[in-house]
Length: 288
Image 1 (cartoon, rainbow, N blue to C red):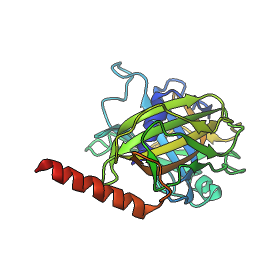
Image 2 (cartoon, rainbow, N blue to C red):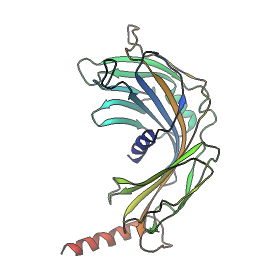
Image 3 (cartoon, rainbow, N blue to C red):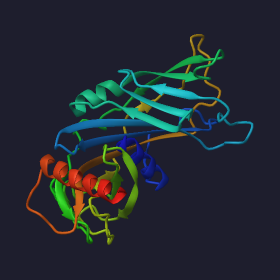
């Protein structure tokens, strides 16, 4: 869930992407693809791809905003939504290697116009990523604090290591509920220099609060692939086509931690459980 929300923040922050090329000069829909190497909270490394559709002509006669559009990758592991019932949407499965990710995104994509209605129409279009992922994507790791640790709530500092030749970085600090669900954004910042690998957000966190810190680095690459025009079974082109299409290459990592009054050497899931139990007990006592 946090990854999808992160992708939304990145888009709202206007991270520029790599143009794949225009497949429909008269189109009004932008196709974007975020290709990511991710180090999860448990230090497991995997790859992701978040496709998304954006309509820039909302409210005009040329707009596709009046209906839901869904695109799906050839391997069925990645989808993007326009006018989804929950708003903007994008989904991705964890992929083990850059080669498998490239294979799953290369080939025939499906586009459903008027998705979920009696007027639903299916289109197909070809995507070739070329050599974009041939060299893989380097991974990033959070060095401090350690995942699952107890961290001082007074002005915490975060450090990480990863590729330093990327053009930019985006760091975020989220608050989580006790059940691990997303509670809200605490702080975020764009860092123009990817060689900078330390961040102090300058905030005081809630005692006993559950938090997630993540960092994502981004770079442009030369694109030598192609994207085709969506065609139906009779060879008719989708009326909107693509106004533009782009991709970003990103390397991200995140860790979870609990904020406490004083730093502690105790780390791991047991420490978090003990502190969460202490917090719950205090809340119950306060209620009496």
